[in-house]
Length: 63
Image 1 (tube, rainbow, N blue to C red):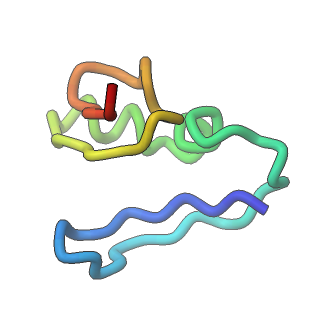
Image 2 (image 1 turned 90 degrees about the vertical axis):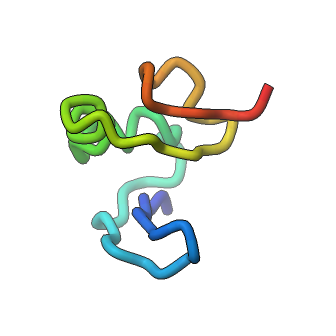
């Protein structure tokens, strides 16, 4: 299963998505739940793993 989580920098969870099939990649899931658009609209800096490369200007990924 794929579950998206939004957490504070200290790791405290703020929100969990509903579970969707695990074959759904992370970026597709984040877009489907409106996470990407909400963060871009509000200009929220997001620290994410490589799966989120190409999400948008406020998403920071390694490499």
